[in-house]
Length: 304
Length: 291
Image (cartoon, rainbow over all chains, first blue to last red):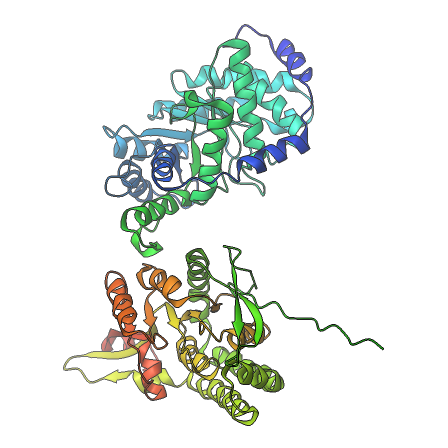
């Protein structure tokens, strides 16, 4: 699990990673994005994408009522459509989410560690995490300390992730790299490996709260890191792009990348997730289109 | 001295305020009645229709939310822009239909007058169609026409410009947004009209213009669940019209059958629905309202 490494060892390992061929990476992502998926394959891709969604609401205006209505949607999005993977909320909304989702099989994910900036003292971030787990969260979405990472203190970032991992206990830990705030692809690669060495169960692109969220090249790069990490250590880590994935076309591009880079082992909601809110309605409308043969519209899905 | 090489215009679709080619990459030659090829026009596909409906949906709420006065000003502005280019449109109509130049100019001028006519209606139709209703109780009850939403229009086939303007003006005057399938064999004046609309302060997406085969594109518009009204005024084939009406039955609210348009008030009424509101009269008085 990487726990045998010390912070300084992990930091020097990560610093020794080769640089990223940015042009090649973007060309590869653009090439994979041109694949056309039709008919039965598309229907399966849509259902798979629905089952991979972490249906997310992270607003100051969230109420237990809103969380309950989203929980109902997560459990049964539309007719015979599959459930989403999880409902992702702020820690204060975890009790409402856990109560509403009990027995549905949909997981409760909670952001924690001073989401989205993470600029609070470590003890507060750990207490945040513990409280979310106590309240019933099955999964914890933590943010890394970008301030420390960008200042070059990889050792500190590593130790903090390990501390949060310990605080999260049995809950699966998703580590948000906030790639929009990491300046280069090289940094994304380093942050991915650092998080995996520190014990991340998932690496996640973004909080959805900054200008640049998940992009296909960045997610492709993280997929490559995850693939190489398993080859090196035998440990499988999941990937979660989040933010900015709003329509079926985009979601299918990501699934094509998963299939090409990672293969079948990652093509389930155990190992790949979408952090999204409006994506679900577009998937449902496309699903209705395939079923009825005519285009659907926003009047035929729920208003969130 | 050599003759100057003429620069031909590329006629494209008008969707969401932009001028895209067809997503399908297809085009088709458009000829005058004497078989002279005039230009190639984009041949819209069902995906272009879908994109146009999405653009119209996005634009609808803000457009309906504008003041009636502003909608009128914008329609009037479109008439102004058209006035300055009347010659060009007359030429395009004459080429498309084979009409005499003065007749063609007459239809363009009639289209300009139609726009001004509906520009005037924008802040008046609500008072004419709606109003206060007498009720037996302490309530103030009033009725107000509201736009349907997105209206898909199959424009008249043989009257490529005036017919198109007559079909879309009442729909947008009342706050709807439209997806118009232009005359299949004579789409050029309609596509040029997009350029006028794009420079008339009309928000992108309020009017979307497609050219292509009616039999191919119209069924997708008719069955589209996010379209609220369907104008079959330009469908000549009775069997196709019946088919489109049946396709629309699952999801649409209003269908206008082929045939001659009525008076302008009927056309304005066509693309609206009535909302009736009950106000407790006592509360209005207590709140010091202006009733």
